[in-house]
Every structure is written in C-alpha cells, then in structure tokens.
Length: 235
Image 1 (cartoon, rainbow, N blue to C red):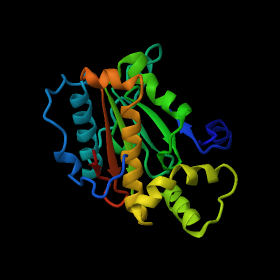
Image 2: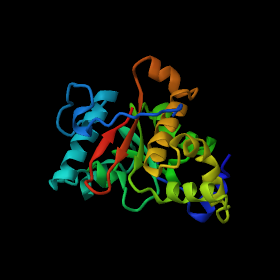
Image 3: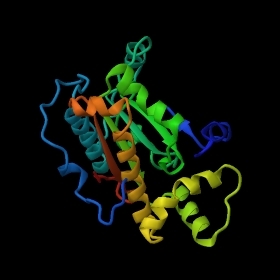
C-alpha cells in the first residue's frame, strides 16, 4: 500500500478533490454518454448523465479550440465563496499536461479534482474521492488516465528491469504491478488497465456502492489523448 502521507509531503499527490482486461472500449468521447435531459443554462448538472454530458461538451470545446472558460470571473468567485456544489469528481494523474479544469473547460466550483501519479489509489485517496458524493451528493466520478503517462512509464521500466525507484516512487511501481503483468509490458495498455482497475475498486466502495445502486452516482473510466486533447470513455 502506498504511504500516501509521505507522498503528500513530497508533492507526489496534488488534490483539489480494473478487474483484468484484454480489450478496452475505445469509443470516442463525444459519442459514448447516454442522452440526458440537459439542465438549464448555467444550472448545475444534477444527474450522472447530465454531469457526463457537461464534461463531454466541455471537452469538445477544448478539442475544437472554442473554450468559453466558464465560472472564472469575480462574480463566480463571490458566488462560491461560502458554499460549493461541484457536479463531478475527476481523479487523474499529476501530469502537468492533463489539468481537468482545462480539459473539460470548467471553472471555480465545478469539479472536485484528485490527482496522484498514475492515478494510483489508496485509502487516503479514496477518502478524498468519497467526499463529494458522500457529503454533497456529487453525481459523477471520472477516473482519467492519459497518453504517455510518465509515472506509469517509469513504473513499467522499474518492474521490467527489477530496479527499485527512489524514495516513495517505488510504492507507485508496486501499486501498478498487477496492471503491468496483465499489459504484457505495453505501457499504453497498462495505463488503460490501471484506469479500469481503479474504476472497479471505487465501484465497490462502501459509500459509493449504495448510491450507484440507486442511480444517484456513476463511476466511469476515461482516457485523455495528449496529442489531440480528446477524452475517450473506457468503461
């Protein structure tokens, strides 16, 4: 188990807060979500499908170069100063090229963001992800892997060469060992497998499972292309 407190001290974790697979879905992000009744303009998405549709639309703008940078002005800052009500939790990697607020064209108070190297998970990270759904009724959790993940690449090299990474980085490699074995050493496949693994783990969470069963919460996995900016849903 990763010593997450140690990782926090060294900056490996930054928070704003799959069962074995051999073939993962690669449906394009823009076409994978269920059709949902869109909320009124600037109204917080209140269902899992509405939340996913909002993220999908924001990512479309990011890809197309038509971002609107919503909720990033003084009025929004004042609006959320005393209360927040984000519509999604995004659990992603610490990679500087994969900022969820930019990837999904969102602003202040829209997302809980949890970030760790290679979106590796432990109880402390799970607790951070739990906060939104458990305390505020946030309807969606997205686990977001990404292309050319440096943390996963380093872990794969460490495991292949049987060389221990320095400091607590070695714990990241240990956490990714199962995904490495099932990927056959293919780093991109390893990234996707790990993403789905984390989704499956969160779906079993004692605070998430009842909400999922009632249709109040969805936990989904997705993959971000650094080359195109596009997000593809995996599961």
